[in-house]
Amino acid sequence: MKPLKEPLRVATIFSPGQIMRPVWFEWRRKKHPIRETTYTWQEKIGQTLFLHFCVTDGEALYELVYDTGSQSWFLSGIEATS
Image 1 (cartoon, helix red, strand yellow):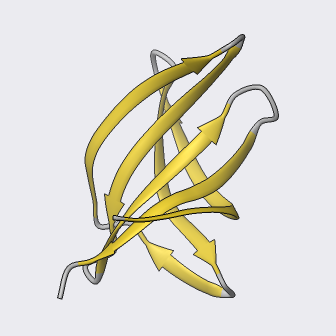
Image 2 (cartoon, rainbow, N blue to C red; image 1 turned 180 degrees about the vertical axis):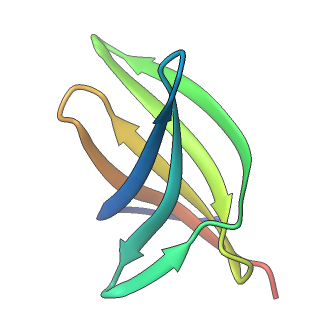
């Protein structure tokens, strides 16, 4: 996976029980609808919790990260699937 750290706009649905699910993201002026979330995990660095989501739009695999401290999203990595 090619590492990055680029800010993103992400649309997210919050379900009961405080479960969040990204549904699309905008990167480099292109909207990517999320077809599937393949894996999620949490990472705590200092006092900040980071929520990681590996997602696919059918063309590539992306690692989206939500920074709970700054309440912002960034793209951590991308891997082409074709």
